[in-house]
Amino acid sequence: MRAENAESARRAAQRAEAQRINPPSPPRPATRAGPLCPVCGSPMAARLAKKGRRKGQHFWGCTRYPRCRGTKPMGGR
Ligand SMILES: [Zn+2]
Image (tube, rainbow, N blue to C red; front, side, top):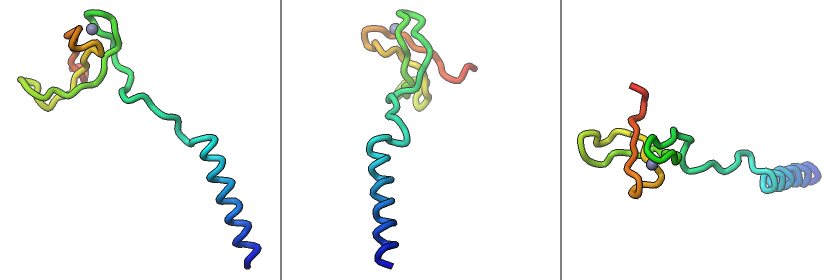
């Protein structure tokens, strides 16, 4: 029994070591790839309208905001 426990512990340690070296999923960027800004051509990031007519709705906003005010509606409707 002691030998089995030692073996399973060793396997667990090996698995942990393998995950430490080779993590299962690579870190992702904070924002998904979006369209390019129609104004300046920079990538756009998903944003949530916090006020105004579109409050609560998601839209694409230029990553250069506030230097660029380019926006695009999301959803393609
Ligand atoms: Zn822009």
